Image 1 (spheres, rainbow, N blue to C red):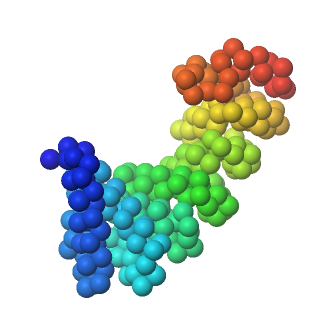
Image 2: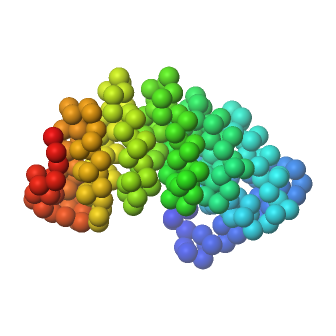
Amino acid sequence: MGFYDLSKIERERLVADIRNAIIDDLHHSSVVAIKRYFSDEDTYVRKAAYTVTGKLFNTDSSLKLKILETIKAMLSSENEKERQTAMNAAGEIGKTDFESVCEFFDFALFDKHHIVRNAVIGSLKKVGAKNPKRALEWAKKYLHHPNKEVRREICHGIELRGRTHPQDILPLLMELQFDKTSRVRNTLIHVLGQIAYKKGCLATVVSSLSNWENRELVEKAMDEIVDVHSRYKSFAAMTQSEAIEYIDRHYTP
């Protein structure tokens, strides 16, 4: 039976059981329950485990060191789900204390399994929403990494911050405009579309793109921005026609 097959009361009881089991493991230098919950087949059980771990770090100072040691150990597990959950736990901690977990981001970004690398990107998004300055400083280190997938993942990872504060990430995105890998450029175009449709964001994005040098990429980005205003019309601040009119008036090719 899955997490959301349970009643609300049963889910709350399960989360409490997970919390108590993790605390017991931490106090006894054990990982038996932690491994069980971190590797559970149900995504929501794993989410409960990493959320609980993050909350314990922030509320019980006596457990901080042990939690960091446990996450480090789990990131070297043979089980990719354990590594994924450990990375997500690091992301929960990084929202308030990135310095304590940045080495885990550095390590897991190069994990052999995509679900772990995706957890790094998801965690970067969460940290960027709460602790943007430090998250973007970290991301900038990898913008020109030799590995194209690292560059693509970093581009994707800073997207969430850009949806509310496009001005924060546009300077970093601009550094990727001449990337030689189409997969990276396509992700860049996608992100530019994603950060342009919320209230007040289109003007910032258009103003920045007017100063980019790669005009071919910019034209594709403009097409994506226009298309996004149709695909996300229920959430966009402007209609597609309003977006087109704004771009026609303010974009300098």
